[in-house]
Image (cartoon, rainbow, N blue to C red; front, top):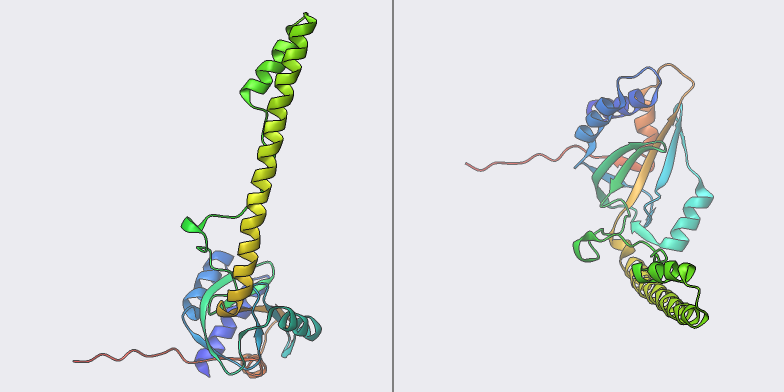
Length: 228
């Protein structure tokens, strides 16, 4: 209990206005929590947005309607009764984010080299297209103007066609990615977000730990044995 009380004390200290620098506080939390196990006492949805658990003095609340919606839409990433590993800890504007067995995020290396999937932007005019337009502005002969306009149109159509091919290729990959995520989401864990809102200058650690244990219990750090 003493270890658990210390960890929650760190969380509280980070969330009040009179604390040490956030960077130092985050390092303390990461050192204390990363690699630890949590006994999950409720099904956690397989989504990286996470479930915020709000501490208001000694009470803990969460949006149950949204929780049920996420479970229905994305399925279970960390089942009730699972001993989940805390694989990542971050302090953000949302609270203290604890990644459980991956945090519910899609694997970043699902494409070769961890390529980020971004929608293609329309191509710029080619050098030849811009050169033809410049020639057209300077040309006074009607026949030459007509020839230049035809060439410009060919360049424009070629550019548009390439834009369409790029979009089609993007949609194919995006569809594959969506299918990949849908099929593998349950293997990426889930996320727990701790939000502390207290009107009191101090918070009783034992009460907060007791309340948190209803949903997720922080387990003692595993000890390593050495053989002689």
